[in-house]
Image 1 (cartoon, rainbow, N blue to C red):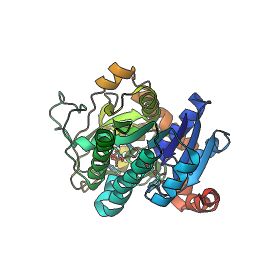
Image 2: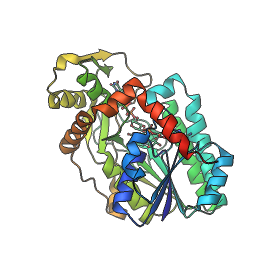
Image 3: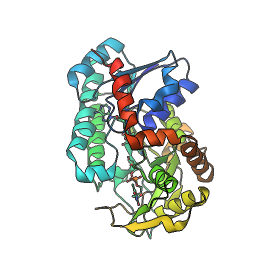
Image 4: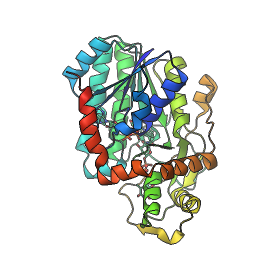
Length: 342
Ligand code: NAD
Ligand code: TDX
């Protein structure tokens, strides 16, 4: 397979590229990423050493570039990770979420249709379903749960999903969509809960917990998500949505306490702060379909995954420091500009 991975310099995309190069040495992987604040070429340092990997700096919304790129590279599969991904940023500045997540996906779909790719996979999120009440632990998101978004981020992801599915229905495009719960693991930008808390705890700074800390997220180790996407692009049915999650619900405050305990830090660092506007209460995925159809199950238990994750950040404090000081963006500018499609 020749696979275009968009957004591959970000958290999940980079983990996916590393996973695919390891598991499928016969495949070629091309990463397209415009290197926003969330893209970091350091996440791909192992991939750069692999002859089956190519990086191109470019924006998925740039239709001229995308068309030329598809013409030149002749991908058979596209996996679209590229997105603005942080809910808090979408509350402050929704516009870029609409541009990248909706218009960018539309540009990729048009190129994919024109160049007759064999599979377009859209990496989506459980947030398109909105939230579940905290006092109904019998309720889960299935693929039939109606779209009911809360934030500009989730609304933009839902719009993209609907476009992808419309291209299947209208043009017969071979698409699949995965909707995953919260990921954690190496290379996650320290704006998201777990790496932010690790970074703050390392610096003995206050850990900001929104509201009362009782909101629930369903955590999945990133490599389990990567394996699910790999299974879907190979064996998933065209036109189908697959929910991905491992029945691992935790209150935010439990996660924060786990991080502090593992790092040997005091719970006095916890600081309750103003709640996020429109804050979703609970996410919980029913993964029955992907299990039944593709045999996927998560392999990493939270207790193991969170230890591996914390240890990774503690072993890679230079990675965190480069983000804190902005040094990584200088590296992106110098290195990334070598790979611009011209
Ligand atoms: P991230 O923010 O870490 O990475 C996003 C990447 O996309 C970055 O490398 C960035 O430079 C790139 N990018 C952004 N705009 C671009 C554009 N216009 N053109 C080209 N590249 C662009 O995100 P992530 O957490 O790795 O999430 C990846 C995908 O998975 C997103 O689509 C997100 O909605 C989805 N998702 C994330 C989670 C999660 O827990 N992080 C869960 C479910 C789904
Ligand atoms: O400082 C914080 N304090 C806090 O209490 C941050 C950053 C978050 N939180 C809370 C808000 C959420 O309830 O922790 C929970 C997790 O927050 P995020 O890490 O921002 O993730 P979330 O909003 O749940 O969205 C994530 O999962 C679904 C990803 O960012 C999305 O890209 C993905 O689609």
